[in-house]
Image (cartoon, rainbow, N blue to C red; front, side, top):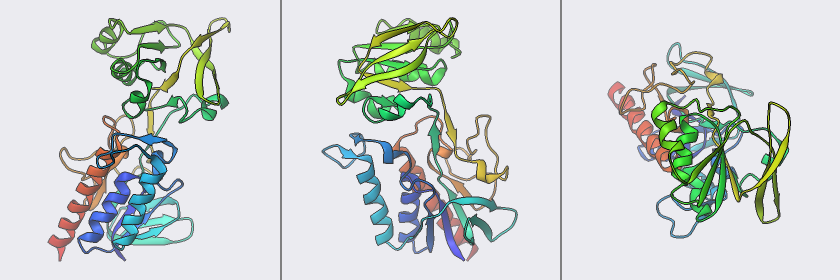
Length: 306
């Protein structure tokens, strides 16, 4: 029996563990398929407070993990397959065993949806990104492309104009599906030029990174190549909530619903932190912040029951 079981091991999960353990609680982090989360495929991070020089994502996660271990968090390399929140103690099932806890923090994150073409995979972290806020700074004065047509794509395209000299917006149709205000704001920006009826067929580059894109017209399969220095994918995110099997209330896009200003979910004693409940900011620092909140809220609930 643990006081707090934390499912997931990105910035939210490790921070929850650190705060929970320092509050004197017995904490276990079940690290999941990719310990460290999305930052494990991020090259240099320049916007996490406290680091004067850029720090590689895997290095930042290694430091968080070591800190959690030092303060007494139990780290388990396993994958949660199912949970039972029907009654306390809550049950968390991995492939090898069932664990029980008085409270649970879910910090399983969300995965960016990718184009799923081989060349995209080859250039991830070397010119291909799914986060303009994270990586736009590296493309100052350069020409970049962004794929997508919703509000997220528009927001990312507008953000990129703060850094890039030109932003090419690639969309498979001839109009954006974003809200009218976002679409108008995007298309009226002088730095953004849309390319309608286009899909990315191949990312072109060399050892230095991305140099261009081969685009295909879905109507007739004709192709063309354009020069760009970077490609941003903005076709959505998928929160990692399948293992919950409907036991928590989710919003329309699959993110865990939390009470405003808290990390409390629809089940008392179960909390959600990081990108699994945040479709807006999706930053390491905000994930860490909600991890802190979840651990404090879990600790206060445990105190009230003692």
